[in-house]
Length: 420
Image (tube, rainbow, N blue to C red):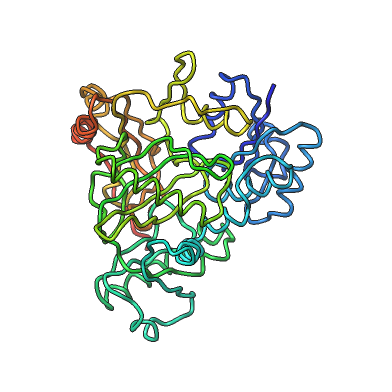
């Protein structure tokens, strides 16, 4: 039986989906998570205890497990797990992305430097250390611009500024976010730095794929029908297949391929974000991991013998060395809405879920927020309210079903009670 090591956070959405896929495929799944290493198997999953800020000890723990259990492949779910997965794969001698490439993908600043060095379309940008004043840099900043933390994901802390006054406010707001306890607990050195880059107008797209020995294999190209122009950049809807002309799709795929090569990615999953305008295709970032959250449920593939498999199953086949060349997305259109958090406060409930599920084309409505949970919207927020999934013959119909279902939901969020 092939055996795969899955490195993830204990709170990640996707771990259960990978476990179910592994069971169905007959692949043994070994977990490595950032669980407590002082208690004896607190989650009852026999996971290898790791700490993403302590790579030396984490790799030693993985190696110790590999001495007892042969590991045929390593997969990381999430940005920081992806780096540890690359390091573990290199240490164990199995296929994977080079650690240096994954480290570059995890830093917006390193990504910009590598894409610029390769001569690829890139916004003007500058680094802003935590103790640096803006005044000395304003002459080099082109407005509108975007302020970004280097290592946060999901548009967290990303703010557009149209003039120096807005830029100062944005920088202060992001620095306050990075000073919070939940961020400092990450012990990520780059969380003290900011990136300021020129705003790129245009439509945004996402590409899901895998690298196979240095070559990109596209699994899905998503359109993002909602404009993402700021001041915050909350992603809501992904729909595939893309409704764009073949020529534009080809340009996106070519640009992502060039960017992946420039970053040094070689073997494993990738998720790319890009913007397209009359000046070309600008790759915003490439993550050396699968699409996050529950969004993978929007992707179903058909393979030899006509079986239907999930993205998780496809990636597990890939990581243990099986061929996935004959797998293709099922016909028709599929879409997912990451339900936005309308305002900060204490979550109580969502009314209208049953009505939303009854909308034609809706596959499921999943509310991931928990009662009494403290919610924040972007740019401080780090989660969504939940997810809506639809299927239809055409992408536009799948998107309409999402919007109609979302209109049926009424979110009850109580204001925070101020501390006195």
